Length: 195
Image (cartoon, rainbow, N blue to C red; front, side, top):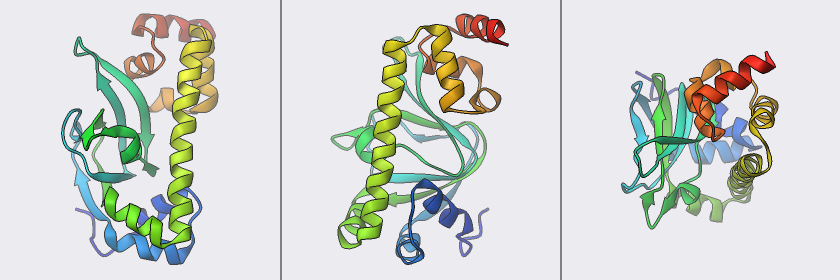
């Protein structure tokens, strides 16, 4: 179990996400709740109420949606320390648009999205930090959409390797194939041709 008095991992996750001064970190830390999470646990479930912002302190997880056929369509991969997609970008009317699943045991820190918004209004450094994270999320989404629309299979894999180093070593290839909108067979064939 995580020591509730030691917030080293939380502090590291906060400052690794975007620049943040020590005073702002000290204001944020007491509002987070740290939780140990088991492997294969859903942190966030599609179509269920969702109110929190989440930092990944240890472990790995993935964000995906379920298609009409029940297939997983992967949207993001996270290796601690990381900020998971912001609440505003993954919910509609208070309900989650996606699933976030732990692939390994790990630890997360959660804060109410409303509480974080209040802190952002009251503190310029926290506001800048939050806005930087949102910009990063928008950039991630737009570059992913661009790659899917503009690139062929081989170029998509090269794009993945350029923008997400070591992803192939850390996550299942069938998940990466889904992220790149290709079948696992095509993904494997293209990898073999490139390697």
